[in-house]
Length: 424
Image (cartoon, rainbow, N blue to C red; front, top):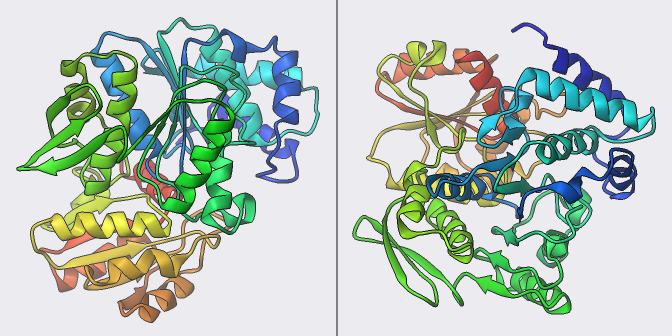
């Protein structure tokens, strides 16, 4: 893959701060001010936080809005194959020229001051969004919420909090209540907030923050309900019931994510046919994605090949639920994780659905958990485990023993991104 101009600028931006993550809004506000405060010139913003489901929920909101004839900006992170995936301008991934221009302008305006990579690239996204007409702008939180670089919009049209669980404790707090407090930091005065399924401890904090800001809440299980019935999805709010197809994205957790997306679309007055398109037309890579072409698929022969980027305990539970619903087949995991994640919590729910696990290190990631450590954690939860030099080697070892296997590559968005870059 050739190096583009934006790659060179992005590499330069990595050196502007000694830390990858340093949560504060001071540097963001300084640079945005130098850029003329583009965050104040955006289309109506829908701001999305949560531990799991942010990207999928955003994808479904976007699909629904676009089906209703709206043009939509969307910001998400991290990217999988190319940085351009993070910034979608009025429905289209940002061009290389537009990205390079926005990055250059932000780099010059920053004047060499300390700023993290995520902060300055978020400024570039906001700058690009401010200069391209659209009907809505969807912003996905990078980490937490209260001090996240995206939390610079004073009056979004709506905020969304997807399920909150334990993750990133070193930045957000050790307890569910502390983490929920950080996520709830996106709630704004009198701005409606859609709340997905939550544990009681998290919901209590979210409700308290909303009360302080006089922000109307629309909470799963109170103001809206969603369930799977007879192979369909039923959504009900305080106005009416929608009988819809199951989400295009597989898994019971995607039904809940679809419910949050529908609650947002209903708030915005989007018609039922566009709501149906939201769940049936949304696509989001590396969320239990069936791989259908490329060198890995060729190497798999008659085996099924799947890819998922979930990486925390809640993601492990959701993934196990998806595997339980698939037709019976011997299932083998190829797993690589970062050393900051709770690998035992992630693997434990998967152990009862997998025949074996092949552990790999994530290529090019300094924070990868070594394959040996991943294999040990798998054995500790009762999985037969092996180490492999790379994904292709693991895949070949699996299909040599079980040609008709189901193979799931999992454990990290960074591993998923590596797969998508090299298996295109």
